[in-house]
Image 1 (cartoon, rainbow, N blue to C red):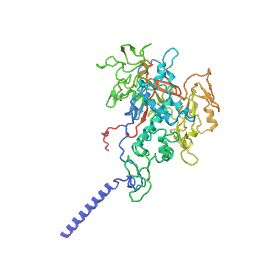
Image 2: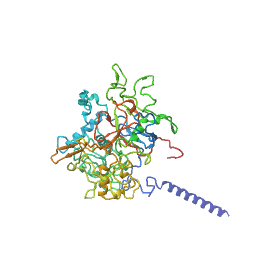
Image 3: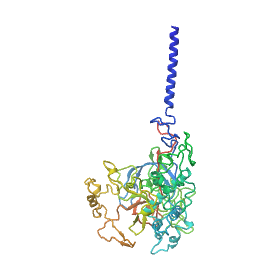
Image 4: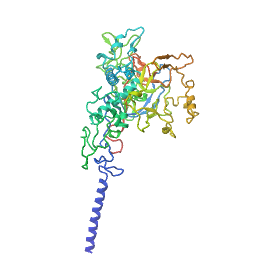
Length: 578
């Protein structure tokens, strides 16, 4: 009996130890390894490399974080124009980043400096690249007004350095966003040790038209970045910490001496930022309203008429009581008040941050200049088709693959230019970028959410938007369906013909049958400007302008999508932990 008890006790202890070892084994089986396979991640000997220490997306230079949410987009108060151009719709916007201020003359001048240094306009190959990027300073001219001071000085003079840039068309604003994406990511990769230090400063030496940095080119084909110069595009040893360059012939963990593998930064590295871009109309309006200041728990306490609280354009605070909260046209011949008692401190634009920000921390979301947004204009926002991140203007493309099976790069010899309707010539893409082509049947076949590359006129009433349109029709039938005479909106079509000698023939469309100015090339702009009455300061107001034309009252600011969680709050919502 005694022996039996001793054996039972030994058996119990053995079982306890076994369970303990088993539980320890289960708990530690994926430590430093994959939860899918158990294989070690980021092993210096090789294998799967991933940034497991990523915490959150860094706030990009010059931007503030905008937490997304639900709001009523469109006019909710007076509509003095009586055009039903902005019928209220319920929309949801994802979190994103937005420029704290409008893009200034100094910011844009930095862009012009880079373009001029890398693509010298003195060379015939590049003259249209630089000239196509320069803002139209003649927008200040007026038949019955003396504005030559602004024409000659507004863009370049230091007195206007921190004033919003104007004279920039929608296409130029979009290209500025692309340039900014590349310069910011280039700077990040240099700091992290993936690119040669101070390379971006030595413009005209290491950085040239044939050898420069493009984010998408680096991600898709890093060995071709900077024309494949390995002295600039650095290699890093596996498992090596950021910021250090791998020495040549570095010794691997197993004692062997070999070239480093998996040495380029990728999206999975977590350090490359998404692209800078123009905000969508929904994003811009949501950010301008900043209803977060009117929120109590999960409801908004009323709707704002302006980006600030209250129903008036003047401040009610004791310290600033009576001061205008934005610069705008207050009446005929009144752009800023009387001398000695200026109502808003400006007669044209004003320096950014001259007025208080809204509840998101954004300046000049009313007044100063109106701002381009991404959207193609249509009178009605089609919320029946979509109420999440609403945007009209998607044109889907893909990387062009060359005969060798790799991506085809834009080079000095194959730059393509577009001649705009006003005769301005602009480069479609810059050397060093990946050539783009429209998506085709390989991407659209049997998809339910999109079926064509160009979706600008989707569900706007034309034949392509109807259920009778045959999306599998032949190329000739599709071309017939896109005949300008069968368009939904009969906007004028101004043509520019350029012969082999470079001579330009401008053909102005004088057809009396044209009934509208709306087509796929007009873009929405938002917010009131220094030239506008108070009505246009309402964030819900919306207007349109041809994408290839510029004015003295439209500028822009950039946005960037936020990856990861909606909010950076440390406390998890509900009962979710970790």
